[in-house]
Amino acid sequence: SYELTQPPSVSVSPGQTARITCSGDALPKQYAYWYQQKPGQAPVLVIYKDSERPSGIPERFSGSSSGTTVTLTISGVQAEDEADYYCQSADSSGRVFGGGTKLTVL
Amino acid sequence: EVQLVESGGGLVQPGGSLRLSCAASGFTFSSYDMHWVRQATGKGLEWVSAIGTAGDTYYPGSVKGRFTISRENAKNSLYLQMNSLRAGDTAVYYCARDFDGWAFDIWGQGTMVTVSS
Image (cartoon, rainbow over all chains, first blue to last red; front, side, top):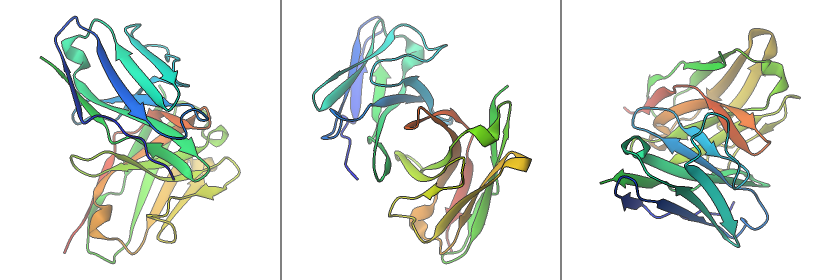
């Protein structure tokens, strides 16, 4: 299976925009999904099919795709957005997760 | 309320076996593919297994031949039989519902498996 690469950490101040990238060779052919995970909790799906937002997820969460990179953007970051974020995709051998990015709200 | 509740985790010696269970409620369990995903402490997420509505199963190379996923639709239950356990299998194991054929939209709270002598 292939790999998805994320930066280990991203830091932003409240109200600013956070961008978390995920790179993988298969991303031009496969959709990407994003999960938010807070300490001691299960992951929550925040973006599906590169840019769609599930019901109940705030509008400040958005996703985009360009070539081999997908990006999760959080506009107007709030303290409650501090969490680990994982991208995920799939190929013929199964589901693949990125290594995760810790978002710190300064 | 849509819910998944895992159970069966615990401490097991290397080479031992353990069976995890996941009780589903609030949705038509038989209509969904289901998965197990694990997370070692302080580490990332790793997909462990999947089972389709027809009982077809899928595994990554890291657990293939050692883990067996199964389901019992009449009991709205998902299982993971883990054999020949290794220290590297130590993790929180999550049960998750399939979404879109590629992802996971509902997760349980997880059950901890510790493989140690």
